[in-house]
Length: 222
Image 1 (cartoon, rainbow, N blue to C red):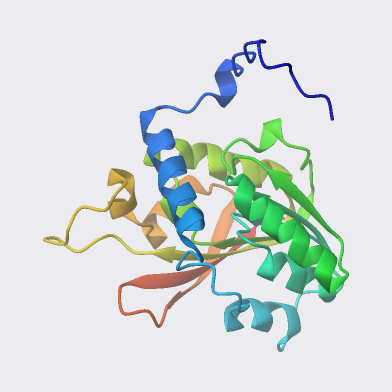
Image 2 (spheres, rainbow, N blue to C red; image 1 turned 90 degrees about the horizontal axis):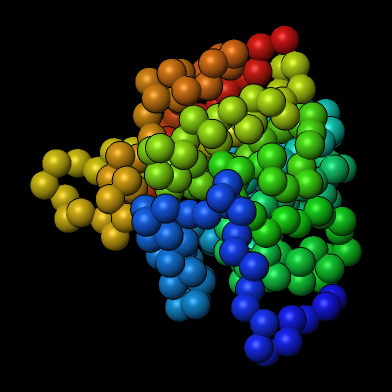
């Protein structure tokens, strides 16, 4: 890789990739979680909801999968071990580096991309994909970027593709305001129905966390 010399000013980022103030707040908050150690959403354990979809009764046949907000790659590596062709994206470079190390240690092939899940057109992730997996990525996306997230997945979804998403519900009234204001909005079934046009919301299952969380399963219309 070429390295710019110390006196050269970096080229400005294209307008499409510039983050606004709220997006910068999200980026800084996520980076702090990874610098401090293991983020709370990155447990290193594949959730049973994903295992059921991949290995349970009526399991999906292996195909092409895209993980949004892959963290350190636990679930991307799991999918690859079970025969899926996996692409995984994360906004934080430290997480992507750890995911690459994990995939290499486990001897599985995962295409790992450092980038924004709401700007998939700027990444090498053309699709089509049969499965999308999101473990608390969407619920952390600022509200004004969520339509772009939904459009990116819809454009890349094979007919009948599934989206399995874990998200935090809205913050109850009276709770302390979270570090990033938009995070208080969480995610709801009504929001997903409105934003994911051309998809059917198949299932909403409450999570087992002490705060409101949900597992959402959506299917792209044929």
